[in-house]
Length: 442
RNA sequence: GUGGUAGUAGCUCAGUUGGUUAGAGCACUGGUUUGUGGUACCAGGGGUCGCCGGUUCAAAUCCGGUCUACCACCCCA
Image (cartoon, rainbow, N blue to C red; front, side, top):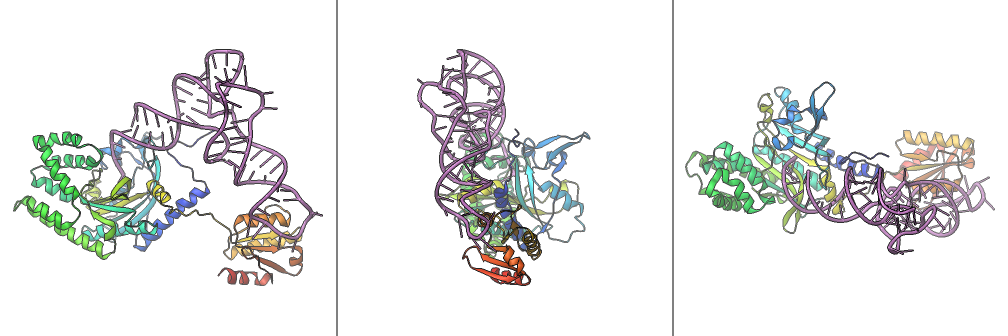
């Protein structure tokens, strides 16, 4: 006996149909925003991830050495591949580049709820536009996807933060860029660990001021509107360079929030500087989608994304500003399932063909073929068997109509169409079969 | 990676203080006179009781290990 590998899923038809439901909604929504589909390799050089994605991800790579001695990794995320692809043609792509991909990603970590070794992600990215209009468009798309799946403002929230603002703020407090990066890493984990622990981790950069600093950070993380943020920050920096930068950044926020409002997604988005995101390549606005529970967020992030304006350049290509998000199927499916939003799709035929014996069966198969060529989903019993049985199959198949080619009908050059719901039957010449079915189904 | 709980048919589970060929419901297959289904009735297939080892005359049952799943940490999209 064999089992599938830990953390890898098998998709029987019922699960596959649920997965495809997600994919269909993802694809349809992305296309409605004018995004174009692309795809990238599942296996990449290990190098692509080692230095570019941040050390965090590397420990959990599904990697090995191939037969040619190359160090390779199953892709843990799509962004580095995308950055390479877009970078390679950076000078010839019409901007903005709006691309999406639905693909499988892998990580080697202990499987648990919401976190498997293989999962599917919708990745959407806008490249070549540095202004907040791109961020707004991308967040609007993310919200549209969530809404299309039935999730509303009561169910989930997009927590919107800003690494640039944080960096300016930390600079205004006198931290250099390297220290600020380290401090951001601590802030990112602030929610998931105790205050004492957080203070201890801040001490290497802030020493005795760590505790006071944390109080200020916590105050910032609680802010939910731009006005409050502005007044909170106004005391910092003054006319210093950092203060001016902070002011400029707040202007960007104004544009972004106004755009989100006009795009009709503001009710799903909230300002929340408690989000920082772990990956090292993020630069500006960042966001994560969380399930809403009793006023607060809970569980694992459903989706996340943000700006990565320097990644393409770091990979050795022309500079190309970019913003993107990833939405995984595992946490999302769990959430939809909990809320009863996963339709139990079962693929049903439109027509079940019932065949009489002998010549009638041949006529029935010809009929089935004609129906299929007309675009109907058609099934019939694969072996010659009694009518009672065939009707049982027809009923079990969920078909809307049975089309009967019995000896009597075939002798008349006809077929009998039975509405499986009402039981109404009608004998029609074979030549009119498609026409009549079209009327009944239309 | 660390700890806790669990593992009997495709699914949900029974299985008496260890005692013959391990059960039920659902699902599946076939049938209830070969021209009418979704209900009903009858029958059937399917399990080396997660795996390996130990204790015992005897293990689904007790013990150890291992694998897997779930939960909590660690870590993190």
